[in-house]
Image (cartoon, rainbow, N blue to C red; front, side, top):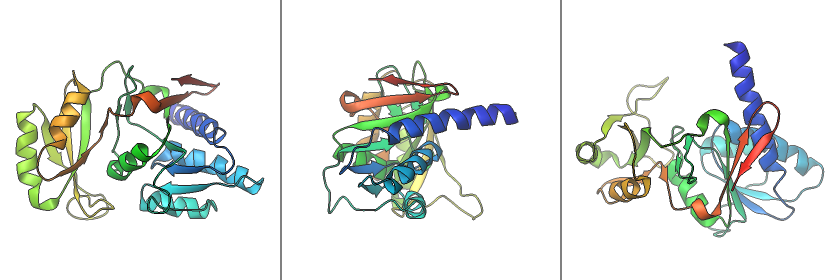
Length: 231
């Protein structure tokens, strides 16, 4: 078990470092949330110490805190509405480079950053590459509409459940002050169609399906020895 965990961490580190080495001087980048992105920030911090000049838009409080710890200058979408690139992780990646994201509950801001970027770099380990998207799709919704949102998701064939917090009582509250509904789908035959259906439900803020960025997405898949790049 320990060896397996070390292998996964090595793969994440390799992907994160590879992505950090793609950042060029003067860039403004979006920074996602999650363990693989934190390895990217670790490497980026070293490059900044060596003279690289960049700034980043964080997608969560957690990422902002980690960026400050690594002395990565921060900015906002207000000041930089167009980004050179965004670097983020994913929970699943299919052959068309459609994604499921959001198990860290930051997918709304991550989608805003991805939309603002000219290029999206997705860093994952080999286990995240799948033949077809399936399983849990995180959906951020306003608390007022949680019950009707879940009823509507059932009509789409999903099995929704409000995400409970850990080390707190009650539901997870996102950085935007909303709830997360985790909705299980056995198989997602048409991710683009499902993303559009979910987006039309009143009360939904964003889903963790990312299907609109495939043309500008590069996937870096890390393993213990080297990375492979999917474009």
